[in-house]
Length: 537
Image 1: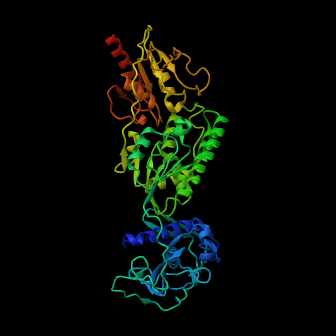
Image 2: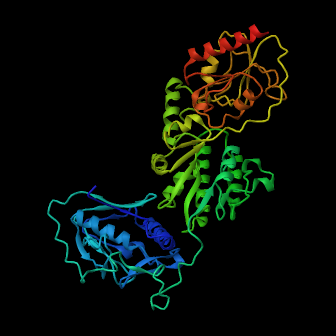
Image 3: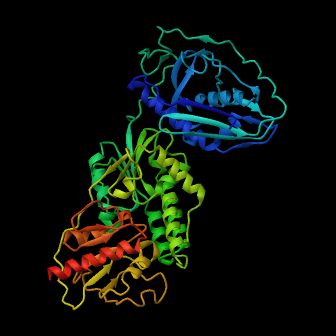
């Protein structure tokens, strides 16, 4: 890293200024998409407008704050000077030759201009251009409160040419010692520079962007939703009879449906196997498409987001989260943590055809990790996921299914249910080993994805009409589990459950927790549970 400039985005100038400051942040958000990752060859000239392009309404730019003749006025594309200032400051640090730079005509107290590190730009004749003797990579992004610009590259062996003298004469503003006048607050409507462009919808909306329905998240959104908030959903599942998308839309000022993405995803899913890399790649592609379909909801007046986890890395990658606070509806481990858990299981069971068949691209893993690091709050009912984010997690209560008393076991042997597919990440190998020599029958629900004959040596039984009928014990020694719905259903009717911490249930009556991958602890827990059943009988 050759140079870095970090500057605050939001100013404390009162609520009247907020729409134009929000407009500035939105304009920066659009410009950064054209700037972040740009590579400048050695000796080439970097030009601000050549890279960013014209800031027009047609390209999505809005009214932001522009300093003109000592006043802050609304202007389409206003606020981009914060970016040009940062680039100029970084270019000076990196020893670049300044080919073209113009100072502001006035200096706002406390600004870069007051320190002589500013560079104003105005399409299409006031530009910032600089040349580096070595190759450069520009990295520029925003978090909720700051703009960061970095220049990376190799140091040149020869010293760079001295920066050219800044052009123009700078005179400090002296307006009651408080800075420039502003069209939003000066009250002089007769001024020739006065524009009513800030009279836009009130700034401060929240956008709720979701995907698959969880009852816990649906209940949470109803609590935090405010008048004016917008909601992005794949489909209106309540109207269309699609439980997977049964989000409550009450109270949202606007509901956006991405039905085309949802239909294409369903079509892809039917053509793919239940397990494997192809399915996971397709799910990621659909999440990227869904995230991008929600982009029209993210107007400049949206300053906060509540976003489903699977959309997070793609919204981050698209620059949509910059300059905004956001909370994450956390439904699964972060991809880096997920990889680590699957790798640990794969080392225990190298012959498994499922434990090592997919890993996400490392760039996507990094994008998710960066976004999660910037999230204001992590919202989840899953205790194990909440523990990954101490101090930032808001833990919701699990939705407990309505209990219905199952029929008792009338057979001669105790019945154990494995309530998931026969796949390594759900602990199938550990359960098979733990049940060796145990006089019990097993109901293995779901697809058998570890290959034919996996349960050879275990006494299998067919499931009843209702899976809990005749069940004495539910065992789920998973390495990964996001939605322990069947475990909750079993506990609700008094059926004991053995599970691992990754199931995220927390301490509950009837629940025994064993470490993932620990066959000895699992066998001991199963033996104890069956012994308690026999004693009760």
